[in-house]
Length: 106
Image 1 (cartoon, rainbow, N blue to C red):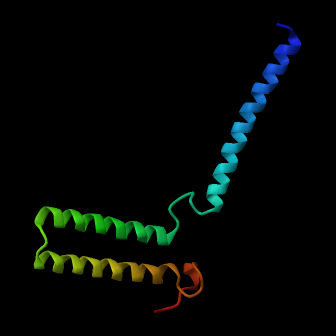
Image 2 (image 1 turned 120 degrees about the horizontal axis):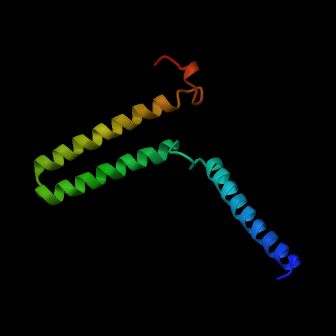
Image 3 (image 1 turned 180 degrees about the vertical axis):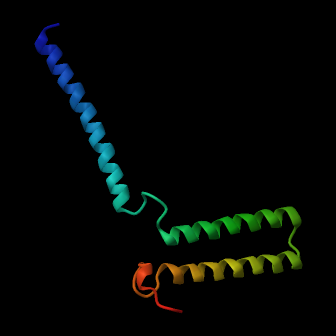
């Protein structure tokens, strides 16, 4: 194997590694720009809470059957979650954007 062939194959391998590394870095920055880098999307957080409650209630209905007291209990749980998410929304967006320094006094 000549030096020229070795050099060409080594150059191709280095370029391939650099390309894969570049794609990895670019993919991370795109994910960060879309807001999926960490769980900072409030609506997605609330959706996950609602889905968790829905799964919990399905499991309760499967285990205990569908009774009046269970439906009453589950309606109370939904009301608590709705109230929690409403106050969470006010805390998140306080009328001046998402900055706690300029919080209105409600």
